[in-house]
Image (tube, rainbow, N blue to C red; front, side):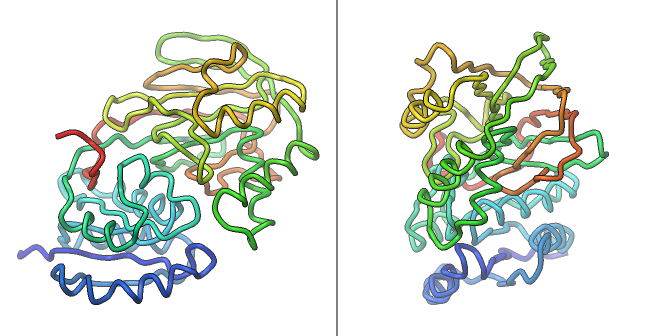
Length: 310
């Protein structure tokens, strides 16, 4: 069977619909680059279905045009395929945060990103997997936030009139005032086991989240490991003063912020956890999740990554 070249999966409501005119303006360049079969998403999880179908139909490359949520869905679709059938992932970031594209070194300028998607270097990258006590599981590429971090994400949905970093900053202030609740957890990695009371924990495959929080500057999508950042129970004022350190990626110098790398992690909590996966709500305000198994899957997919060394 002859392999078709490129499938482009576009989310027309990315960035509150602001992605639509950007995508339209890229059509002449798309033709210049050789063209692609263009399909828009129309409902949640549609991008995952389209990505899986693209692999089944023999496409060599799938380009996700949207935000981190679109990439999240596309990767979940690709991971439903056998490794040998997974198309190369390209990204044209036209969403709100675009954090995973940043970690791969993809341009924030749509025209440049589209050129990179067609012509940029391809590398194998790690993907992470999470499974919980409900029996639900999914793949993720950038960050998995637990606790305060996830509450910021949940509240960010209510301040959607703002864009980018402003959304996350305003949501953070609301969570700081209204939802400042720690949890006690038993944690076990492939190397150690301990108990800890936490305000938040972010597990990272990518370097950045929230449109500008440099959570794990040293994270790599090619080392077979996940990086975690943990914040214990601290006062609100101290947490507020900690935020600038997360913004510029210097939080690791703080004695009360703990970092760790691992291949696998298991978490048991004394209460239901709020969780986001790549910025998508995994367990919201009515969560029943108190047990998680998390694993890094090395070199799971191939992706266009201009920021990686050959």
